[in-house]
Amino acid sequence: MAASAEVIGPEKSSPTEEWTVVLPRRGKKNKLVIPKREKEVQLWKPLDLETDPERESKLLQKMRICIEKLENSEFCNSLFAQMQDPEVSDKFLKLSGTGKKMEMVIYGIGSIESFESPRLQLGLAILIKRKLDWIGEIQVFDPIISMTESKVLTSLGCSVLSINEQGRRKAIEPTLFFMPHCEAELYDNLLEANWGADNLNRVVIFGNSFGEYERIVSLSQRSIRKHSWRHILAVKGITEEFGIDTSFSDEFFRAFNGSSWHFFSSGNGAHLEKM
Image (cartoon, rainbow, N blue to C red; front, side, top):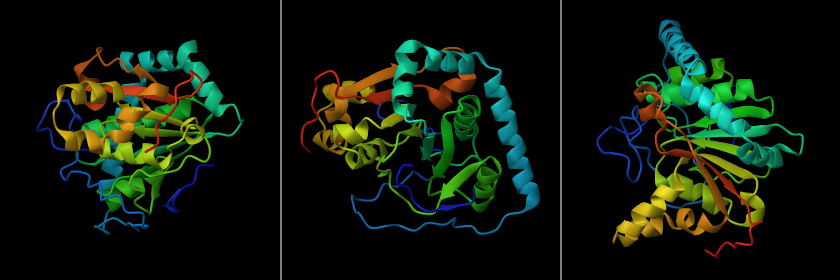
């Protein structure tokens, strides 16, 4: 099992800009704050400690509707067909070949109570677990998760982390990091924590296209951006990226556009530069 924080129990940025650096994650009124690269443990709990059964019931019903909508969609059929394609499925098989279930870690999911895009993203993660018997526990973290959302996440079979890992989970075992439309710094933190071929070989990321970050940087003169994305850019040589098709419906475009699967392997002879 991947090294993990303690768990309690078993969206996203405001839409103010187009997908260039990061598509704003509808559903998060307050942008996810990535603190400076400090190593201390940051304990977390919901700021609001009150909830009520009616509020939880309404949110759980919204989640069930989203999951059903996804399950019967062309988008979802296409994504699972992609995962079963030998070019992609072989990479998952290598990761899950130990016989152990692959843990899924969801960072930056945002407010599933306030917005549909985070509900669709969470719904897809839950469907992936339901349809693939080699996916194990789902752990979730976002600093804006409310007590109501925490209880609903638990009802859906997820665990809510009690520590803000800042994306720095070291993959001791094969781990799927489900991170659609997260901030670039969160991906960079994750890569930094797993820098080295041995660790990255145990990581798969569902998230923003790393190729798109590279394209943006090639057109940009802003050195700060290059510095904050340094691991994303440096990992190119051992990354295999498979884009997610969102052309079927505008309904799912906002939640998933610009997303890709990312696998890492040094088998092609490429090497990671020292950081």
